[in-house]
Image (cartoon, rainbow, N blue to C red; front, side, top):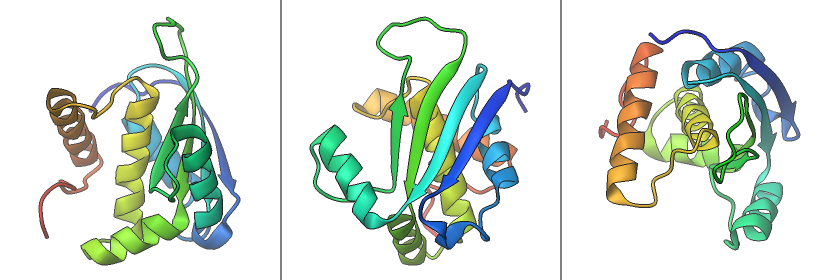
Length: 153
């Protein structure tokens, strides 16, 4: 398991439906596991309406998606601290977990790890980058005692 990096974490439950199911301590553990450097992160849970608006306004895609990452120190800016907002859409998270027959907690852990990797500059825009990011996700989740999210169950 990698060394713990300093993490300043803010959690916002704009959509409170998962506040009891997914505690701040879990979110901190998942985010910290995916960090390669110190970070200042906000994780915000939103409903489908807010998720759709954010995705439309910032990505030009008019639908709610499971996770959005707004990284504030990318594009070649070298900074000591990763800064980002990670937005999880409760409606999409719940629907996908049900469709995949996995727990909401496991799916949330995967999406947090995915979002934190995006915050640090990882992406999946091409096959080599996607393969690298998936491998990191699998390794980080395994370190957390969680299964491979890319294996059919």
